[in-house]
Length: 281
Image (cartoon, rainbow, N blue to C red; front, side):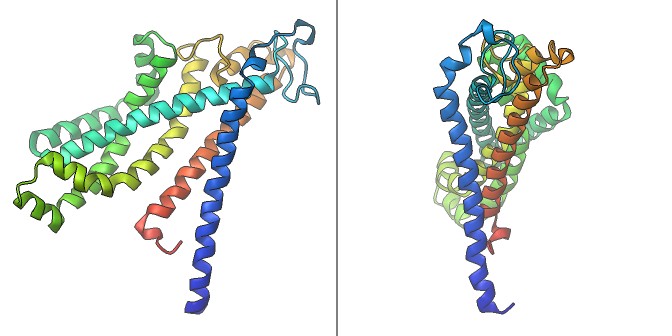
């Protein structure tokens, strides 16, 4: 391939990557909008239509109270995305603060942050999530806090490594020589260089947060059991699988996996765009 042909090929790859990001983001936003619009339908009961299989009238069938499972699945996915977004943003904020503090102040602060990262990574992840959610009394707020508190270590380690590279640069040394404070260096130099990594890292936290929210809800430690969370739907379906009501578990579970994969696709493609090694995209 000649240099001219290669140069013409590169923009196509970048456009294709942007198209995948836009398509996945549009589907995820569509799920949020559909879940919001279908919130009332997800709670509407119809005892005459209990435990109906998938049909044109009810594409995902109905549950034991005659509620439309498609509406409940969309509402559950919306709730999972909102909880995952909140938890991922809080977790990313913790990671940014700790990484910047470790690099700017160094010494004892750096050792404490390193010890915290190693300690959290050494603990069994799901067990820690369950213990925190149980200690906080369960519920949506407890899930957000538990997921946020347990998902920052890996991102902190990544940001800390990039921040160390920035603080060793000449312009940061000049800033220190001019008497700039640690806070000024963190906001003026570190923040702008870490922004792309923070955005991508936050997006990549979403799939883990969504799946762990569903797991806690399945175990009864998540959102209100009366709400249409995917974990709650899967937990309720366990009672009826032996009776042949396969749609109660299979269809919501597949939708959860699809949404998680779409969010992961957004993060992976965004990482490819901001990674210097992928400059030829």
